[in-house]
Length: 132
Image (cartoon, rainbow, N blue to C red; front, side, top):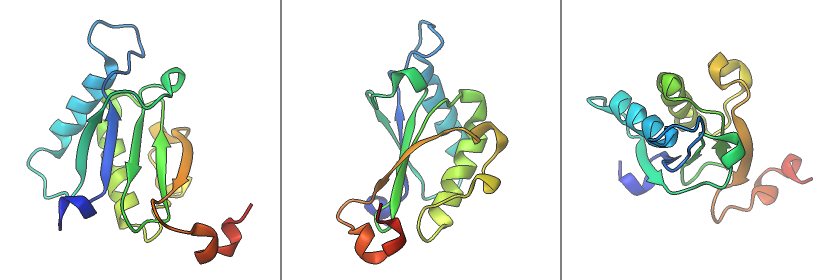
């Protein structure tokens, strides 16, 4: 699969949640990269400087072309890297990108901060229930 069509997890590496010298977001990124090392996952991990959700850090955004939605995740911790990667795999496997709360690890029960329409997709035209 082309990387441009992969599920992409953008991780805010500048997040300083916790007040430590090394940004906690950088540590989260490193833990996720370590969790992906040696796997056959198509997941693309990208660092990003600030997702503008500083009070809800650490944060990450997940997106894949062709899904109905992408999501902004918050309150993430490096120790939950395996749960975050599991969520990303479930997102990738879902036709719409939706992962029901019952299918998320307990550590991610309150992590969904927002969802956003996929680029170039008229969600309302495809799913009338989404009009609000």
